[in-house]
Image (cartoon, rainbow, N blue to C red; front, top):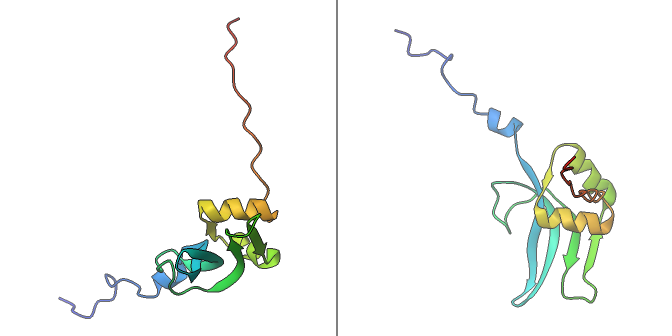
Length: 112
């Protein structure tokens, strides 16, 4: 019986290699006056917790709403596998960082 066998021990550094990164909003601003930073963060980090980089900001209270994004950094993070949340994907489309999906054409069944 070998108590020092390393075959069954999990690799503790494995979780660091496969971090799931998200582009998401981090809330800033005063109470009832929200503004948001667009950040790159691990998916398990809290909404206003630790982040890797700020790549832009979004102010929904201005008319029209202000979206400013560092396009180079956003494209970099998307290219290395970071996934935007639905809201951030919409903001990136509005800012022109990612292309909007083409409209789906209605499929009609021919009764021929």
